[in-house]
Length: 169
Image 1 (tube, one colour):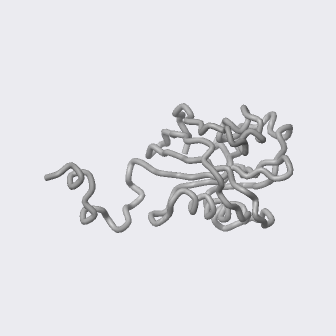
Image 2: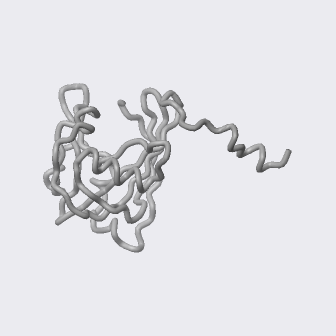
């Protein structure tokens, strides 16, 4: 048996795995428009909340860019075009380990709206926020607060490989 055969056998792959797998691939969009960033708000389970850029797990038939477009749309009704990878984040969640790719996106259009998908995920609000508005907020991914947002579109931006963190979901 050759090395290639042992590593990949298409006949052994399931057509669509169930969600009980212990690893998850996810994608998120970083969208900046007129000096503000698009974020959604989640309850933190302790009476407070946190904010995050829109994103979520890949569907079986998707790649990273398609997942970013779908997730941003489902959570906010904003249309985007992914441009480049900004960061890779590893999260140890309650029931799985997740690798999330954060992509800078161009805003194409749309108005923020409440969506059934966002309600199902527990999102309580979505909006455009300036840096000063985020001073007292918990924001994910964390690099959004530690970098100048204009740096993201620079041709010299280097993809961040973030330290692993624990997530409470």
